[in-house]
Amino acid sequence: MATTAEPEINAEDKKTGSKLWLILSTLLCLLGGGLGFYGVWSGTIPMPGSQPDETMPAEVEDLPDIAFVSIPTIIVTLPPNAKNDHLRFSGQIEVPADYREDVEFLMPRILDLMNGYLRALTAEDIEGPGALFRIRLHLFRRIVMVVGLGKANGLLVTEFILN
Image 1 (cartoon, rainbow, N blue to C red):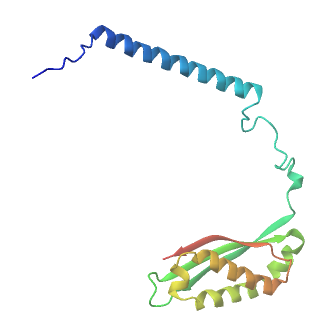
Image 2 (cartoon, rainbow, N blue to C red):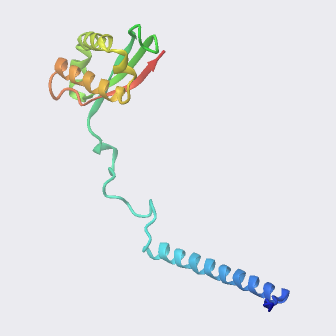
């Protein structure tokens, strides 16, 4: 039976091989760091905040002329088959600044519509996936019906707590 002789690996060759990998990896890291520095320094690789962005507003005067009208907190008792007992809701209505007084004047009607809608919701409407999004859309549509088209830009929900 013939035996195959395995080549003998010398301990000195192992040390030389591991030193070679250490030297090569160090050189590659230095080369990569140098190329990265040059790319950023020359502007080839843009850095955030290094150049002014034309899409950002230049001054505060460019902001739209809007106001926010607070909606008082509404607490609604949920139906008997719901997981929770109460819903606590509050928000802000985004309006053009010219119509702020008009919307504040109509707040009792807005609260009446919101109370009616929130009390008519079923447990599935409140606790289902995407419930807050749908409720916000329905409430905003009702707000626009009360205040008029163009007098409300959006509804911001600041509190939607199920107890």
